[in-house]
Length: 260
Image (cartoon, rainbow, N blue to C red; front, side):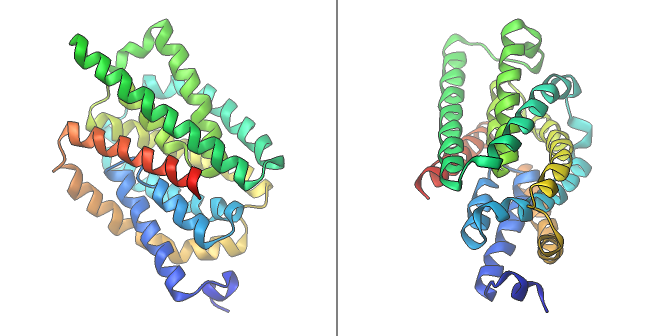
């Protein structure tokens, strides 16, 4: 019995999942947050809750490729500040998944993403008007620590309930003033560590099992070409365009979740 029969999906649906897997690779090495489109495709083809379990190993494959590509550009002080709050968010998200239905999950995360995108645009316009340019070290201030904890909890929560933590963390890294390579290197390590830590929770909730891993094995091959395309594209995207694409992907993901 083949993988498509196990999941009762058509060849066209498998092609859509393969395209979504390719987009995961692209987002991990080029425009972080773009994989919210992949999230929507997986949830449209597969049952909503089950789709999060299938998508998680695909994301981990993309994370590994991103770490191999941008490992020299990670900002570890930022990561260490984020992890405790993210862990709390993952626990809250796990509890939320026990009783929340799909509609509640989608609405909550969609609203959070749009709010974060609006705040980031406002902050960057304010900084430009004042001639200020935040640097990653600004997170060492008291306000920066509060911001890191807030984004960390939201990122942990959204990544656990819908694999949608990418846009939240993208908004945080942009607001902290990261340049393109530092952004990609820091987010690569962040999501590799966080997504691997989510696996036991997902297995415990029944979201990952033998059937889901069979489908993952069939889809994982499509992540690599997406990552290679992303690596080729990122060298041709300037910083301002990069930031606009990240914000646009976040808004698109939020709207998809709210309007589905």
